[in-house]
Image (cartoon, rainbow over the protein chains, first blue to last red):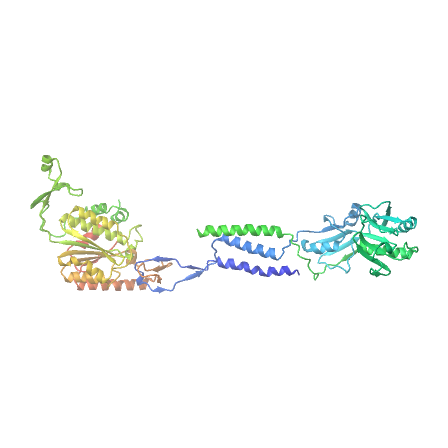
Length: 327
Length: 295
């Protein structure tokens, strides 16, 4: 349960104006009579009546309190029904095929591949009986996700074009480096540029002299540590020295360019891990059963603006009506 | 034909009510020494509005082209005192005649008495008891004084309670000269400072005539049992209507009033305000059989 939902327990506060506005007692109708002194005394009879005065003001005040509590409790209306969550980059034909059992379901285009995180944040917007289908190359979460709704994952890896990575090489052993980058097949396509440009992500500096100061790149591979003062004293991981300079991060290892496949694979893996980021796995296709005990998502604040405006308007109206009543 | 009760309820003009009531009534209630205006000629006086036309000297008008009124020596020794109880309880309305209250009825009858006194040439004064005060209008004669009394009666509304004994004693200093004291009220406060003052006046050989007003609903003890009742003079205490208790206590109260009046030789007329005012007036001013009842 969302901790802000505890504010709903403040709803009995609405009873206060209802009680304040209730005409608690009405006196019996009395008539003057000159000869009343000949009559036996009667106790003042007061009747309890369930009637309210200033009904408009009462309604305004109740609405004001309910709106305030809804604002504090972060009201989310379950306005979405059955839905098909489409991961970006999914082909329409694939969506048509996978969403076969979800005729009439609402299509929602997810902002990114992480369908589980989006669903977790927006799960309260779905009606309790809504069925959800995730189509496309969704990211696999670290642990099995729990939802209050039945979620069907019809996921599949989408073959994508390899990502281009631009590299500039300053070396006398140009051919060796090109052979190395050509070996980086798979999800990458490394393009060796003649001169560094704005898209250059890596510069290979295989020269004894220091590079010019205007040359910058996120990552440098330096073969000669003498050209980089302090690089030999820099911290190293698995024989790889690294140092941050104004030109960018510099990596250095002895024996570059790597000659054997394992060394090349380890180097590319390090580059991927440290600079590009891990490529997530595709979540396996499965059916997630609804779990009533699943934790509610974080505060969404979807209606916060509207509720805030309604609160201001109601407050102004309440003040006006109160003022008119006092006059 | 408009009944007299309705007329007195709805006419703002007391003068009209007086004419209407007195239309079938004789001219006097006692034999005064005066034999009409102008018997013992005294002087001429310039005409003033309100003077009777028959007292204008027409020969003098022909000679001087001005209106003059013959003033006569008056030797009536009777002063008529009109005492009106205008406390809050006098606002009790009739339950059958819309708009008629005890106060309106008492006002009309006292106005009639004043008109009769004026016709007879008697002096007449007015005492209005309301709001713990006794408003006093000195006794005088003449048509203009009648207009003054009628105007004063017109402006009276029912409010407050009876004045205290000290206030009344200060107001009734006229008691030296012999007179007729006509008291109209509901006599719900008995004994009261007003009752004591009346009995004292009677002991001083004034001719005290009391008119006790009821409504038909009071006489029949016929009131709605649904609402709670409160006394207009006794604060916020509530009462419920119980017919038997009401009739018993009311009869006992007015028996006490009648007994006290009889013992002190004060003629008391008990009347309902729904009765024709002419009949009540005649019964009131007739040479009394003590303790007469018109109800």
